[in-house]
Image (cartoon, rainbow, N blue to C red; front, side, top):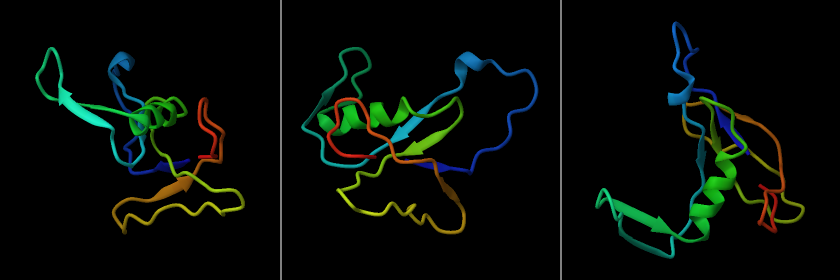
Length: 101
């Protein structure tokens, strides 16, 4: 798991109920259809579940990027250029996944 460090410090009177925990994971989705209430795109499949598992590892205001690792593979943070820096948070087994993230 990799953390983006491009976040500003939280200042002032903060409504903590409106701070998000974000998990990012990439891959193909199984299906997409309109959301029953909003009509916007709603995605389904294992990649959505993996992103939720990654998000569960983050703290409030933190963005975590999931990177699947095969056995023996060394984890290297992705390079997003000079505008975003990342830190390696650690390698974890996530519930329901057979590979490390």
